[in-house]
Amino acid sequence: MAPITTGHYLGLSAALLLIGVAGVLTRRSIVVVLMSIELILNAVNINLIAFSSNSQNVRGQIFAMFIIADAVAEAAVGLGILIALFRNKDTVLADEVDLLKW
Image (cartoon, rainbow, N blue to C red; front, side):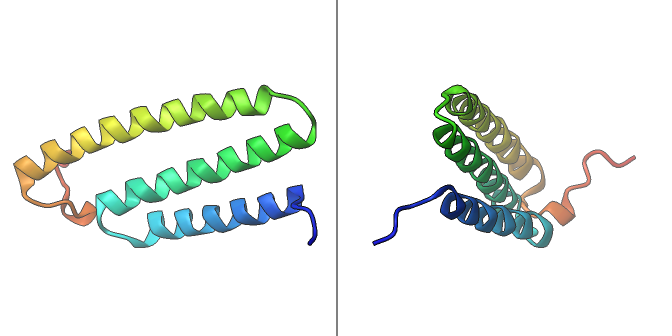
């Protein structure tokens, strides 16, 4: 059995990035868009940890922890805004959100 190399991690990261970008660009539901953004952030974390492990340096892993903390805060604020939006508009579709229009 072949060992897992940095290339394997980069392939997984690229797949997660493509799925996340496709989800952001094609979906109408704000919940799915938020989940797709989380996939993109996880792809970045996999890259950071893979290169950190490859170079025997912990800076990438520490930076990945900060990104995880940022993703948690983003999810909490995003879901709070989503709940407030649903209470006001009775929808979670991004196309029907026009609160900032004049």
